[in-house]
Length: 508
Image (cartoon, rainbow, N blue to C red):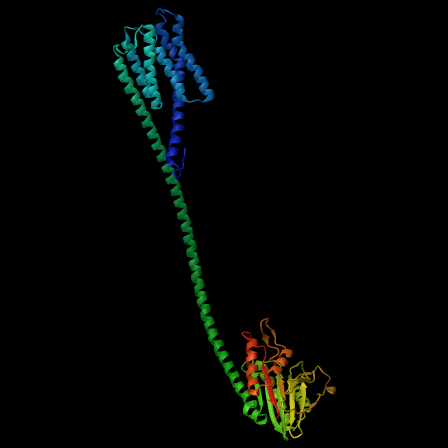
């Protein structure tokens, strides 16, 4: 029988004792009933030879207890009522039968027999003390009634009989012993159960501790294995870190060398480009907004004077960065060769000369190379008061003093590449009268192609033209500053898309 010590332990012990009390009590009651049923009639043998005043009453008192106890025992077996009730029936029958036919003058022998019964019941019977008190009272009630009926005695006469006082003392003592025995048995049982439960709990806890120890040992082994793996991983990571550090240092050195080379190339490219002072020498009222995407640029501006005429070019080569810069060298070389060496001042002829030179330099008739450049060239003849323009996929914008915008579009074909009919390639030449206080603009597509704004979209050429209209009345220096601010504002944190070049000038 196992009980939960963690929940109402005292209540569980009481319930256990009740069950044990019912078990032991039922066992004693069953054997007591059997003894009364089968052995008590044998006690009548000595009285068989004695003359009875009333045989029927004698049989009733001598054999009635066995019959009554037998019937009650059968009911007890069938209906499983309390063994205490069965004990009370047995006690009532025995005490009643024993009190019958006692010699009124020989009461001491009866007292001795009752003392024997009291002692026996105190030692053998298991009952709660309450029932022993009832038995004690019932014994004396039965004896008083029997003496009143068969010995014609009064109640006080009975208690004055010799030996009654002994019977009372022995009865009280025996029933006290029985009560003490009941409590001793109860306490011993509860202690035994408590110890058993404590033992079981200790066993369970011991098993739990053993399991915990096994788990801890297993986890400890796992942790040890993991520590070994971590140490190996740490060593591997340290090795990789050292390798990465070496590679990083190597890459940084290579990158530094490359950047150094590119910066040197920038110095070469910068030396190739006309200075701002040279630009303002030919066009005093002008600006250049030049913003390379990388250190070196694929866009470049160009200006010179030949035969009293000023030639200005804005060139946007394929690509940007180092590839674009290489193309800018090719473009600059052929532009310089066409104007300075060959003396060509017609913008359309300059473009044709450059195109042929690029094809030849890049051997584009022998491979699939399609690199080239978009170019806008103007030739300013101040004496004649004219300006000539030709463009290879480039545009000249003119905004007069009233803010009216005119877009002079060049050919739709870039310079370089072999995807066109070379025999019919020619560039259209535009001639315009110089307008006083008008603003002229040459530019690459870097500004209009820049992503940005609230929706991360291209700025677009239409917006670029509108913005030029809005600032055309400002000085050239202010226009450059406003263009720079607009570009930075539109781009914001976005990466720059391409090289940017805008040339603006007025002819007064």
